[in-house]
Image 1 (tube, rainbow, N blue to C red):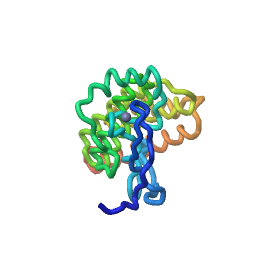
Image 2 (image 1 turned 90 degrees about the horizontal axis):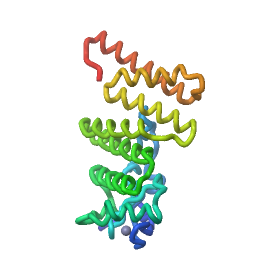
Image 3 (image 1 turned 90 degrees about the vertical axis):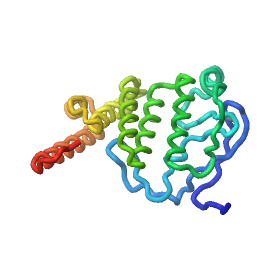
Image 4 (image 1 turned 180 degrees about the vertical axis):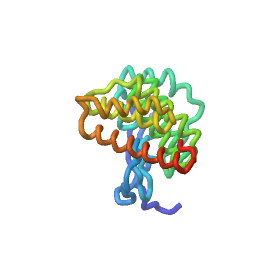
Length: 228
Ligand SMILES: [Zn+2]
């Protein structure tokens, strides 16, 4: 097996079983951020670090992402009872991953997070990232399924501050647009466009996105093709 210059091995100690392992992370310099989609999916050139965000313990199956906070004491007991102890076999996802393996890593992080009663916002972001991975695969059906669950979870999420509250509102509108739920998208964008307290950042995102949509929609109508 040849040494792979794209990755380095990150040392981990599993929160659950306390054993050590190493897992691949993309070396800085092996990817570049080229831009982002309107739902904040980063577009990378080179190796995609999104595939390596979740560390999965090869000994017990506990999955860890940096957004998780309930990673100690009673929360770990809950994760053990309702997820880890029931696993029949543990996958090894510590080296180079396919998109499907990356999806599996986020699904495991989702299950651990759900079992350890993490905030809905943590779960919502996992669902959104799974949708992004399916977008990379051009699997539209699976992308939509996960966008749908991301939207449900964002709707149930409690924001920690005003910035996060606006981001959630924006994402719900943006995801609605992607799902073809125009009524909900319009409601969300117009709340961001007309709300008195809304920051310029999200007002501008909403304006850009809604105008872009209307422009494409108009053009599609003129060319008599179906948009969305
Ligand atoms: Zn472990």
